[in-house]
Length: 202
Image 1: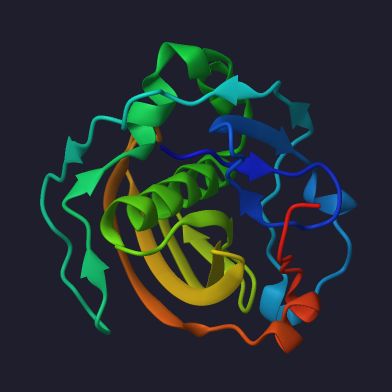
Image 2 (image 1 turned 180 degrees about the horizontal axis):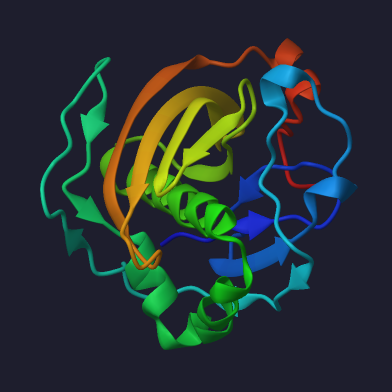
């Protein structure tokens, strides 16, 4: 099961709490602290705070891909998608109802990062991702319904690892239509602080 947190103050990773709760806290980009150019785009949105919501108890029902995207650069293309099932669960109704209040670009970012964490949990044996920073080493690029994150990082078992992913959101901006990713090397601990990567959520 996935949970994602979009924080209210300084840039922080999107963690998955032990309880499996989905917590969505969204902030205006203007309030974010200055970042280096390579990590300039953070996950942000108009001011909106949503109380913690419980994630589904069962694994979210996967959605079949309409067609698998072409693989490139060694990327693994997903054939099942999970973000929509998580948001469709009745316990997450408040998050779902507030999504239309966000700009389309922010909705794309939210859906794709939820999908990224859940794909890692479902398809990578031995990994237990509990946080994701899509902009850790490069900006997130969004063009229409397509997202490219070439400088992401995720935390698993207390360490950080590079990840690149590409995501296409369906025209209704309520589900993911295509997703592919490739894992990179571990991020040296000496680089964590400079890229806002924390070993724990404390």
